[in-house]
Image 1 (tube, rainbow, N blue to C red):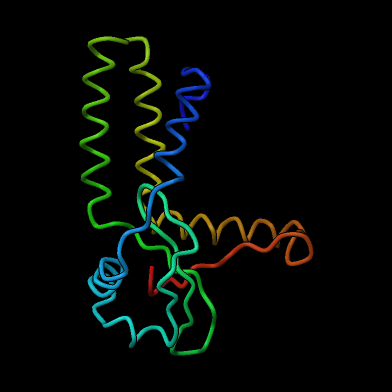
Image 2: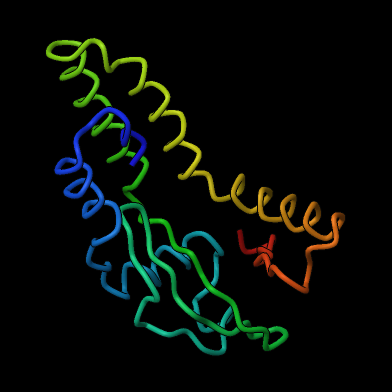
Amino acid sequence: AGLTNTLGPAWIRELRKLENEVPPRPIDVVYRTIEQETGKPVHETFSEFDPEPLGSASIGQVHKARLKRDGKQVCVKVQYPDSGRLFQTDMHAIRVFCETFAPEHVVTLSALEKQNATELDYHNEAQNLIDVAANMKKHGFMPREVEVPLPVMDLT
């Protein structure tokens, strides 16, 4: 997606499938990941947890749930345990290819690597949501026109 100005439309269409048409991981992988991150079984954190994801992508998937502590409905974004390692492996292979066959794309690849690395940082994403919500509110856009989802920081 970050190479839309460099690659042709056919390549972009196929690469977008890798980004957005990824089958979800089994629910036991999702539960195990949540339990490893929170240190608690899923049923202790959530009173409801929809095993059917709202969406899935290359690095994770999103599920609808309800917090046990206050009944608030939330979306739980779960990053696949191997996402970081796979990203690094893929970027290394692409870099070797570019350095060998398309050196003119190395600069673009470096920018893409940096951009995609931030997508793996859910803490940074959570802070960005907080910052955007604060700026929208400061300028009078919330909650009339735009609603920005706010993260549950102790579960991020």
